[in-house]
Image (cartoon, rainbow, N blue to C red; front, side, top):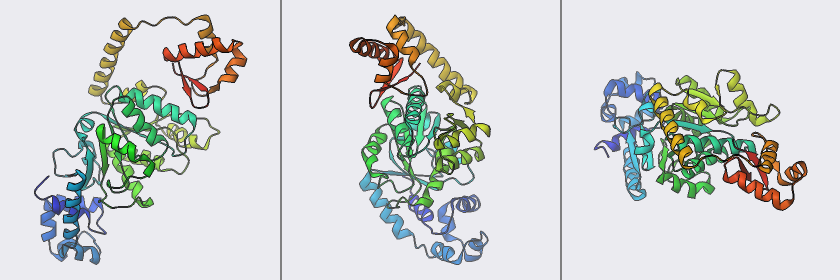
Length: 374
């Protein structure tokens, strides 16, 4: 850690000092130590409240910063400051970058790769789950870091899918990294540490208050080349993140949804407003900077050639084609419905469904439901 890390943490702990104002102060004074040495009039020129100025002048947050450092050591966690070389480059470009980032895990590889944020509804549909899993898996397996917020629903699926694909993923939290929210994602957070890491600008011990999450969302958007919205209701945090991404000059991608579903309002609205409609992973890669796009597409082309030579595709049998034609990309079909439509014997149908799964043509979902993959 930096020798002046306590100054950075202490400045980040000052009540009433926003990230944007703190950044402006750093532009003037250069480092937190100089800010703590400034006089009352100089601090007042930034339109700070008297209470906030008193905290800085009297260095009231230094004892708390020292306690935070001790706790960080116990947790084997780290703090990255705005002045560190390993601070995320894209995040530093936004108008109000966090002064510090509390981190756990190994972020080096995750931050070295191009990143896409995957966000969406906490209460997502089967279609949303499938779409998030499919696209996240495809992107992560091709060397794109997946960033999300560790929330229930789409966020959880995005992190799990990236890990399953042996890719990199980062979880940006709206509370201290020493307490996982929601609690049921505690084991997932531990897995994420092995495939990237968890990140927060909030101090250790900070609870997951509602007002924290819009600030969390700006970090998700700021660390990415673009954000992909899977499902989102009319007034949701995902739409806030998408708006922040637009303001930060990031790409916004959206998966279209059923117009009768409330969770489809967000992505469909974004598409009307100019977001890129996404059906396949290539739709995302096509909008990335030229160098990154060329590298990813060339890598995929080479891998596909090798795959085709090692595992040539065999044509579908008559029964397989019959069942495959009954399937849909955007709607599950129950096994009883498939059986009634294709008129196959139960043993024949089960064998056919298994073959289609092996060939990655369909996927079985909970409840004996199936959906088309390719």
